[in-house]
Length: 259
Image 1: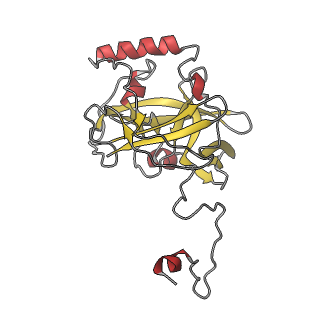
Image 2: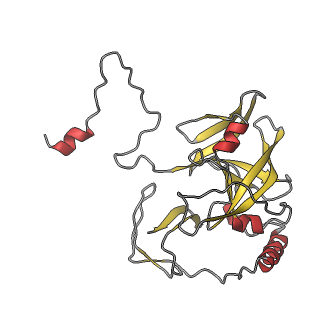
């Protein structure tokens, strides 16, 4: 028996130790298939605004907001200077600009709207709009009920509330990707974004250049395939992009990682 075959065999537990079975089993080397960072659906300052995906990133100490998202919101207070913080786990051009505060409104499973007061540091060069990190989760003593299906729940133990959450690409919390730029207030948001960028002297970017696969590839349903892609990356040395391409009869999830 080869060493590779031995490594694939299940490990025997020591005497007196109870092995815990997995609730989700994937082929070897593909344990992350279909996984997405745990997130909830919420609204910034008003339930009438567009929903914002709050990623519950317990790997970060402080709650973070992207500069792009901050610039798109006219209802956020001006930035204030807080602690001196250096970021090591974001892109190389990440920079903290200051912090802002806002109310993050979330609907519980029983239909009640709850509000969290959030303090978030605004980061230049960050892609994700909102990371609700360890400071946020500890302040409100949040717990998580995880499910192998990816349909999870964030728990407020003292109030007895449960909030729907997702850790899977197949569990949709109600974000309509196809209407992301067709919301009724999209004109207002575009106008606010242009105004904010003008104040900060940030140039308005043209239409992003296309990204092409280096070769044709046939994808089987439910499979993951690594592809070489060709594009003008604008001089960036590191970049991660995620998205969903919707066709008439199927959808394709993609992740672009440039290093």
